Image 1 (cartoon, each protein chain N blue to C red):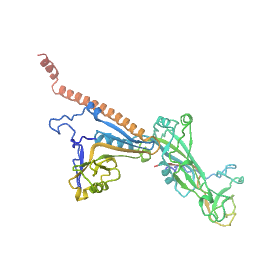
Image 2 (spheres, rainbow over the protein chains, first blue to last red):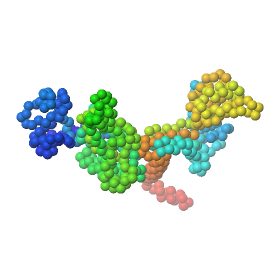
Image 3 (tube, rainbow over the protein chains, first blue to last red):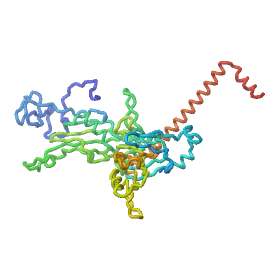
Image 4 (cartoon, each protein chain N blue to C red):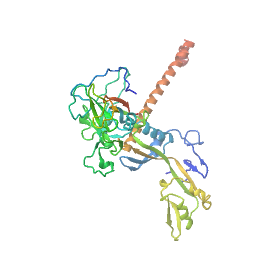
Length: 76
Length: 377
């Protein structure tokens, strides 16, 4: 698969303004990462140092979102 | 149609065997007859007859040609007439349950259509080396994009269970693929943009929160490389069936005889004396099922066969080009191939002659002079 690049980029927290996802409901402060709640499926924004916990239902399991980086495939 | 006396080009279809399979119209087979290739003879006898011609389907006959030619044309139609198809898929986001690879494969198989002249004007995309890949240009690449996100329908009733009422955008269809013309494509595809030939192809199903967002690059290719580039859904031929009634079949037997064949193959005519008689009406409808050969009462009365040099083609287009256009383009490809072959054969013969002369000169350098001296004598 062409997705596996040889150079691994270091993690960079998303800059303010570009929240990563196409639609952002509230202007997210810098360093906010969005996760999906495993229980209720809601999008949870979590800042550095905050507890890993869903703000809607209190569930403690959150999933990382799929990368929005472009991935190339051959239509074969 | 073959002359009644000429049964040479009839393949015999017997109850358990097929006889007289190979063609015999080549030099040296029939004593005293000249069957060498003759363009004048071919021009006089060869015929093409169209029976149905719609953009997506055409049925036509090639009469008085060899199976080799008919099969070449069929194979060229399937594997060597170029079309446009999705080749690369750039997935920005795909949270649907269908995996990226599978989605890309499905997208590749969607037949596209658009302005035919502009499609034919596209040049081949040359991939280049891995180290130096070539940039796609507006001459060789068509860019399509697909972006759809599913949401809950706020107006849905609580009791609704139908996905059509519960969700918005939960089906992704081929008609959702949109064309992004680049450069001169803006002009050339202005009236007839590139789009899916069949808008109702279901690509994926979504549920609220799921999203598909991708860009596709389409290039020109041939069916030899991948089936998605094949312009035809089917391109096939069959031989014209032939039914020979040796003795008249009359009365009730005529109806039983007609029932052995598909509808329209055998007609029942009323004779002057009021008796009914079975006559062959439309052999094209026959499937050569050999049902008639199972009945003892018709034993020896009927002979089934197929006309060896009468090919009934049916070509079904996937929608990018018209079916008859695909056939014509296959004929063009065949012609180009024969021209190349001829040139290469001449080249080979010239080289052989040159090599032979060099070998002779190397053996005895005076040979040429001697030969000249002989000529003058």
